[in-house]
Amino acid sequence: RVSEDCTLVMAPSGIPNSGWGVFTLTPREPGQPILDQGDIVIHIADPNPHKAHGMKRLVWDYVWDGQETGGHYEGMHVTSAISGFGSLANGLSEGAALIRGMPSVDDAGLIRGYSPGAGAASHHHDLLWQANRDLSAGDELYIEYGAGWFEERGFESELPHQKRDVSFLRDVGYCLDNIVPGPSLIEDAGRGAFANRNLVESAVVAPVPLIPLSRS
Image (cartoon, rainbow, N blue to C red; front, side):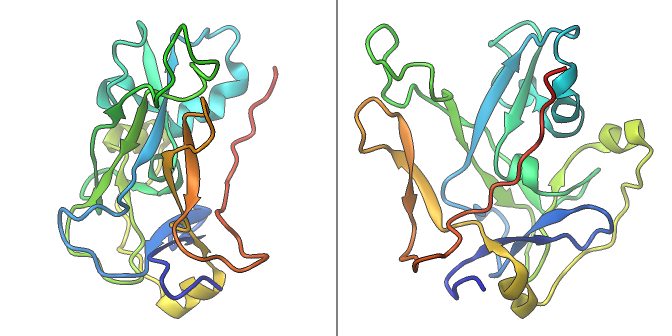
């Protein structure tokens, strides 16, 4: 069971056959950031179509157009993997509960040509998501995939509003705001993760869903 001060959880989605989803445990107002710290953005520049078959599911289902994430100068054809909400939240074709911002850009204090950690941290980070309308405790949070995403796959894009009981979410969900990013205390390590609250022994610090990538 997640702590009483947790405000955001990963739990089974209210959309059939959609796996996990993201739910708020507290009310949100329009324009309010869902978290104070945003997602990391990893740009995938000019993938080789003959050698990237193992990344098919990542590219097909999860990446974003680099034009929308500030990555358009990273290569000729750029797609962007957005960790956090950009990969975990389910989506609608329009009218989603969350609005995506633009990432911050810096080198995390890792100076190229000097720091041994240079290149180990993405320059694009802290991409925030804000509430697009009033949200109630228990609401599932959707991002906007765009109509084309659903049309290409033959999926239904008009979905009913999904909401779950907060007690149920605290029982079965995994807290998403136990840790926050910040400059690492380790020299030349870039950014690190810090506890956002006291955590008891054996507590789940953060859920980490994975996307398998094939070597073939």
